[in-house]
Length: 289
Image (cartoon, rainbow, N blue to C red; front, top):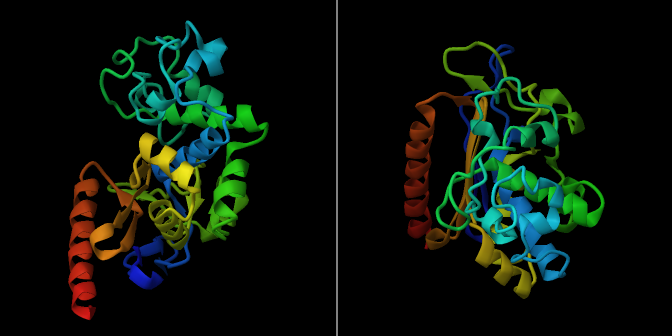
């Protein structure tokens, strides 16, 4: 747990194991799989490209990916903004029966294949349903526009300006020993070697989230664009790991929770612990004032 409070004080609370097999205690500088928290980075990158008029929120999936017409239903009416807000109706590839968290497909094309040629979940903008396919396509779109990897663009426009040197695109970029182990209740297996998405330290995520919320990540116009397209907090889940990243305006505090043991029931438990920490912190901050 990493807490960034008002005046940028940093508190880190730890419990449990960094590596259970080797009896290594939790490490405050450990690298963690942040899963869907990465969607905040992608949405911020899109906001910057929209501001630069390299992308347009009202253009459609068909405009940007004509090859997907006939493969994704309603491609000609699904807009970029709908994808950002999970209002596209595009099926979620991680819900496909062939998707396996312990052995995920290799690369975005294999993941995308699981969402192709399926009926839409609903008509564009008629409902909301969280779909990882939206953000897989948005990451691909960034690469199509800038001509290189979407993570490199995020690094240039977000990570480097904020001096976030402990956020990486994959396990291949780090020493695996620095990565916190990930477990599922009832299994002894350590799932940390499964390469799936961005990884970062709790402190890096905290710095990023504060910048996202206080506006220092954006120009005024970029901030207005971002506010119109996506949220300012996120949860993440990938096999062995779950996380929460939120800014609490009433106490001017960012709280990041990393949990490296999951099951069907641990998300609720983690949320209860998270809310308790926020209440305790709020009392301490208000007492200090």
